Image 1 (cartoon, one colour):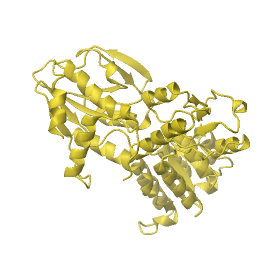
Image 2 (cartoon, one colour):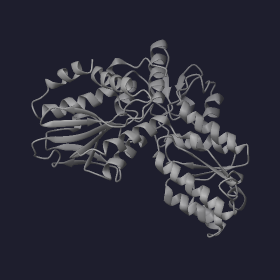
Image 3 (cartoon, helix red, strand yellow):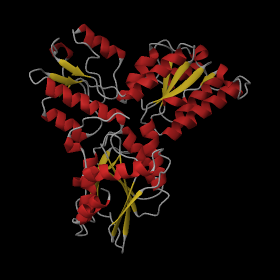
Length: 408
C-alpha cells in the first residue's frame, strides 16, 4: 500500500516500530489479538489496528503539500480536514480558513472567495451542489481534492446500482459531512433515503411492506430523502451503502435485514433476491473493519478499563467507544492532557455531547490493565503521549525507552 509524507509531529517512532513488528508477523492481518505492553504495575493492551488510515494520511499529505507549494495564496478548507482537533488546529495555525463548520454552517461567505484562492475538499468529500458553487466562483472544485478513495468507492457503487434502477439506502448519520456528500452524489443518479440505525431501517421496512401508509414516510424521514421520492414506486428495488465510518457490523445487519424484507415482500428466494435487492457489501471501509475487529480482539482480554483516543466529533472513534462500553468502563479522551492524575480524568460522553470530569479512573490494585486504541484520524504521537502519561502515574516514564528498543 502507498506510503504518505505525513508531518513528523504526527508520527511516533515507538508506535511505528510496534505496528511494523506486528505487520511482519501477520501480513494477512488475521491476528486481532492486542500487543501486550507489560510494565509491572501497569499493563497496556494495545489494539492490533488503530490510528491514521489510508484516507486520512492521503488528506494530510495533500493539505500540507498544498500549503508548502502556495505560500502566497489564500487557502481554504470547505470544513474540517478530518475530525481531529490537533490536525485541524495545525492547519489553522498555518493560515488555513474553514469555509463551513462540520454541520454545514457558513463561516466564510462564498462571495468573499476569488478565482485565485485555493479551496481544499476534505477527506469526507463534498456535495455536487458545493462543487457547482465553487465552479461558479471560478474555482476548480477538484484541483485540491482529498476525498478518501473509499468514500468515492461508495459513491461509485451508489451510481452503479442506481443505473440499474435500485433506490439507494444510505446507512449513515444524516448531518455528517460524509453522509451529506454521499446523499448528494447518490441523489444525482437515483432516489435515495438515509437511515441512521437499525431502528430506522425497521421503520423504513414498514413502508416497503405497506404496513404503514406511504403518507407517513415523508414526516418520519423528513430531511432524509431525495426530492420527488415516491414511496409507492421507489422502495420496490433497493440497495444499501454506508457512511464508511459507521459500525460495519450494523451496516451488514441492516443490509441483511432489508434483503430479507424484500425476499418476504416479493416471495423471492436467496437465488432470486437480486431482482429486488442489490448487493453492495463491498462499500465497507477496510480501516473501519480492521479497527473495529481489533477492538473485538481487545475485548477478549481481561482488563480494568478502556481508553479510546480521538476527536470528540469523530464518528469512527465513537463507534470504537460504543464497542468498549458494552464490556467495561471506557474513557473517550482527545489527548494525554485529559489524563490529570491516576484518579482524575476529563473525558467525553458522546451520547450526551458533554465532557465529564471523573475522579474514579484507575483502580487501586497490584496490576492495572488498560485496553488502548484510537480512531482513524488520531495521530500515533498522541497514543504514545497517552502511554507516557499513564506510565508517569507509576513513576515508570523511563520504561518507554526500553520498550522502544524491544521493538526495533
